[in-house]
Image (cartoon, rainbow, N blue to C red; front, side):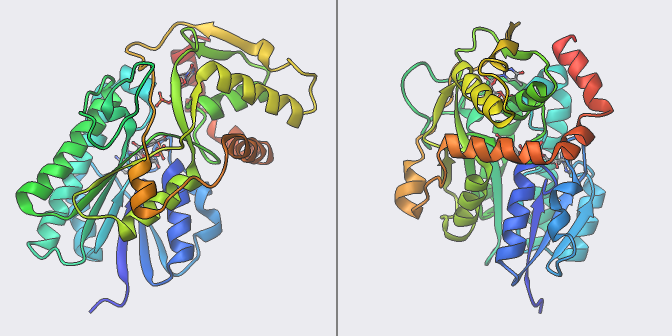
Length: 352
Ligand code: NAD
Ligand code: TYD
């Protein structure tokens, strides 16, 4: 008999995954945590330097699209449970290369589901496939209303369509083969270690470098922002207390229009960098809109709050302040991830 529950976390070298891996490795010495990650442009083992030598942690480099490799590692490690985060995660990249999103997000998820199906056979006692998804599968809200767990799927971008597809397959494996699963759909995350292609770290990096801040369209798009550590805490809670076959929405109760968020970020950056007020705001540049740009996302996270007692721990102002401080203290990390291929991506995406 195995001594420890073995938990596979996929995508653990990425933004959310690295916070989750750290939380689990430190909090649960009784679990053996395996971090499976292909180290794409978004994966970075620097994110996990502080825990890499702990005895209950092991990194496995590999591609979830490679079924043979996946079968081999399942055979070797006989995982009991999985938290699946590995994905292509950026909407703009999905517009350029939709098929890459189908491969990782759909085929990769299918490979994991199939590997668990054959490893676990029909014995699902104490097993769990926990699938990490996004609120973007619900499509776009108008100016009113919130996404609930009952909202119909209506994805608009290749990214959200690929995530919706993977959610459906996870649910189908639950219904058809009895695989125990949980899905959570979270709103926009921000915090340390986020790759600077997403709004907040991209703009922090551009402010540091005195570069234009490219606001898409009129900037009146709304997102619901959650500090990444609060997301990791919610995943921990759902993993341990969530009900099989349920969906949980996770959100920050924290809607911001992009332009208002950008102005707050500019003010906080000026004050941190001791620059005259208005320095960063002067960098705001309205650029061509994103095709199919969803107007508004906003999550009703009351099920998670009332059933499992979860609430975000920081206000947006506090979380943003912590985030900015982290990027300022980790310019080496930022310079490292923005060298090389990032420059090509930036030129293609922003034509500059
Ligand atoms: P990320 O892009 O920062 O990290 C993704 C990780 O997956 C990287 O470490 C990458 O190397 C790895 N990966 C990618 N393709 C792989 C493959 N084929 N095989 C193995 N590993 C692979 O993403 P993130 O922002 O941390 O998001 C993690 C998960 O959470 C995703 O499933 C995403 O859809 C979901 N999510 C993200 C947000 C958000 O705001 N970032 C919000 C809700 C849900
Ligand atoms: P993003 O961080 O890409 O997350 P998502 O598209 O998954 O919500 O974008 C957040 C919002 O910011 C979204 O409305 C698009 C907008 N945005 C810009 O205006 N400029 C940019 O350069 C980026 C990357 C995003």
